[in-house]
Image (cartoon, rainbow, N blue to C red; front, side, top):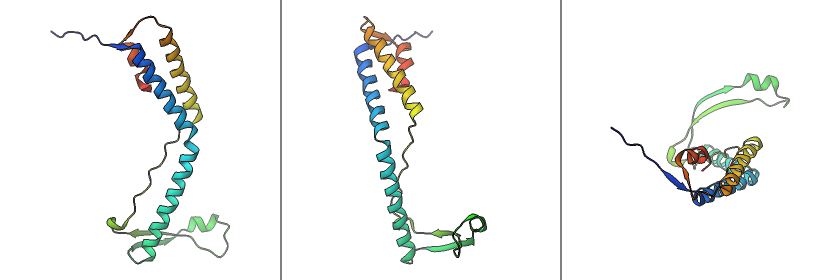
Length: 142
């Protein structure tokens, strides 16, 4: 026979955790353009480093083919596009930059509103603890 488990969470702890989560989301949304620019610069540097390795002779070309589709739709007269597969030693490769997750305005506003509403409701309660089911309803934001 199993016993049921009753868990209580302090309201003050939950409010503090929600306020922290809200602040993190606001910071992430406010700095995403700068983070994206930083990522694009890192990708540019990565591509230049790979190109240096190729030019230095550390690469082995495994396949090269003309890109007929690009030639047909490109407006650059006198130039031809190629697809090239290259093998480089893993030890020589620089660390590839990690992409930044896009945090769109709709998601930000929805989460901000839901977290703010939960904080307002929790601040109005006179109880010192909330049940596990109440905690579960806001846990996705923590």
